[in-house]
Length: 292
Image 1: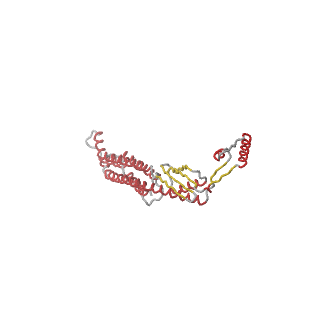
Image 2 (image 1 turned 45 degrees about the vertical axis):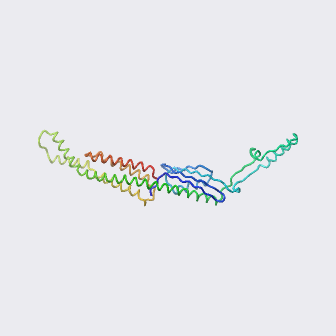
Image 3 (image 1 turned 135 degrees about the vertical axis):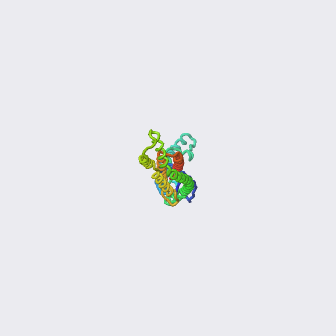
């Protein structure tokens, strides 16, 4: 199924020990580009990136994950007891000499460098599983948005494909007249060049046949039809593979065939149709830039 590369999902989750707020934004990019901001997760960040890589193939993925630790047991407090004893002994001596009691508040004690260290405990296996499941649920919201936009893009591209198919049929019909146009142009040219009233019909037929072969459009028309068929297969809901790069390649080939038809055209209506095809192809390429 065609997917857009843009999408957004944001959700909040709660567990007995954690509260998580996760946002995932997907933007256009030639490759899969991972960007993480928020609470440091260590190895878990790599695991989340792997989950993302299994679901998405292209796009810049911007992840923000903020954690709140609800359980006091999630934290470790380490007091430098030796340093604390020295500070308290010094305060006692100062109080004794001055005759005034000198105290430090708890807040002041914690402000003393290297006095205390508060750090978060490593995430438990249950907490890791909780965050992985939460990330997957948020990513599913992004995927739904990407698929919804993908369906809209595919619908627009199909409309352009139908327009091109209609123009190709017109070129095929007009192309059958090209040999007669070439023969008539050749006849007029020979009449301009010869001083005699008559000229070799056999020679003219040979030249006309050569020019008809040189300016024949059948191969280009056949290839256009083949490319359009391939494009429709890639747009099919049954196609489960990323299609953006292949669609872009086919669009380039369609543009190439339209250019060739334009260069071979002996009919202004064929020229107009080939230019119109190029316009439709350019619109297709603009839509493709947003497809995974």
